[in-house]
Length: 166
Image (tube, rainbow, N blue to C red; front, side, top):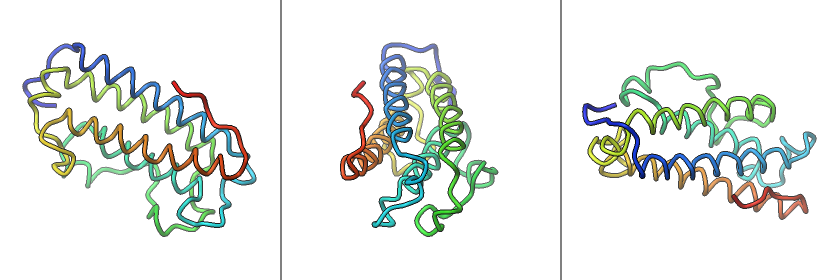
């Protein structure tokens, strides 16, 4: 994190709250898919395991505590091409949910390491996300919500219950 990192303030607290709600809703959506349908979908792009895996990879990237170069050189728990991997190569629901808990903790630690001042003043690790670390945090939150909506749409299409709004 940058030199301007400080103690958390209202921005950090608000982001932590919304990230926590989003991670909870995401876990509920994933848990709503029966195990026997986790790796099945008539549209390969909407495969629940594929979307969940993509979310996991995004979280690993956008909450990484280091430089883009360090991220590129780092080892990751799973290393698949999320768009091309066959269904049987994706993590199980249990593996994914376990790693999501780790990613939630990493995301919150990332926010706290910046604090309000760092979020507002430090450059993002990934420049396409915006002008500062706050923009990167919001980009990541939007990414989670976008793909969570895909999971919920697939649950609706299959007649399965969705998680509650938080």
